[in-house]
Image 1 (tube, rainbow, N blue to C red):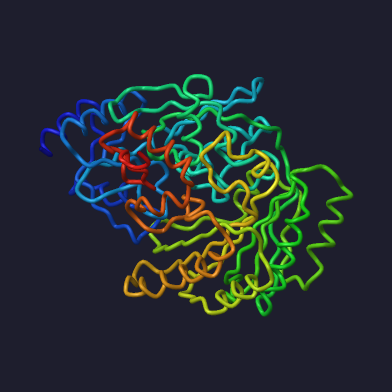
Image 2: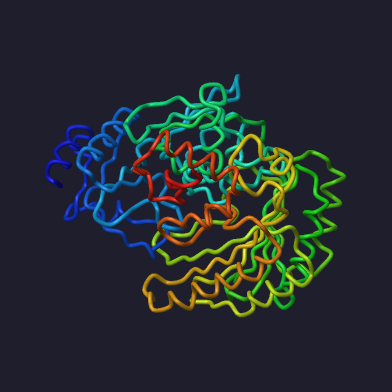
Length: 461
């Protein structure tokens, strides 16, 4: 079967099919999360939508388990699998900008660095990932939290249309006009329905922002979290901040680091913002007028291959009792120099909340914050997996009584494989879950695309 499949794939992607033993195999199969050391039987690298169609058909004909890789950043490792085929979209990474219509067309293998470089050349941007080496496709199909979300919504809120390859190898152009139900599903649960080879995004004028980050001493992380909470509850749409409780600086001491992105032009508010951020002692101040690309780089980049386990919950708010518990969990976190366990706090604010639930499958529009335990450790120490995973889960467990969205933001789900019907039902809610399952039956009744936060076609009947 493998020889036949390889021959069929070579006919579709000549000289771009990689198997074990190929000198590039280990480099190409590497994922962001080193906990998922998958060894696919075949990796193919299509160069356009037609080749993706051919690869899907070849895989279906051969009965090969198949997954789609965009940027490879998925925490659950869904960008690869053991013993099957990876359709790797990294060559579909071009971005074309129409500055007059303020639209950008980008490939399903683009990263936000690729996208931002093209769009900011025209002083334009759209909400993208806070780490710029994240894939555009994976982040957007799961919703897409980013620095501009208060003003412009999630990444998925800015998509005008998609080009999708179905499980039958059919090419669909999807928009609110051509297929409103599928368009709705691709915004928040979109990994289930096919391979998106092209996105068209709506762009916005964003030349410079006032932002960066400010670090606070880690001896009282709860004080910094309360400052962040109160700031974001009163923030205008133009301001989006995130809080990371992490190790900071050359000494890797505990700190509370707040990223700040103010995309407005109100000088008086900027002065007020500075005063607010300095209400407690400051360890380091890196906030200034900067380009949007610079803002996208503020949180740095983590190398591929580190071991990660993330566990997140959306919450209605950050009451003092939860703040204190989260701070205590951080103080019990491990450091495995130069990597450390981190608590990430993100607001759900502004345009994200106002968009409501009608236009997308995103389940958490009315939440207030996202609370995530991010365990990150050295790939040379798999024996730490159990302890690290337990710590991340303990952060989510502390937040769970304050929310009602199941797994919430599916891009942060750390478990590989299908979540199970009960979990997915809790995350999306009964009505949305039923709609998603009906779409799955229409587009992928055999669940060909199942290496994801899966909604099974038999569910919700």
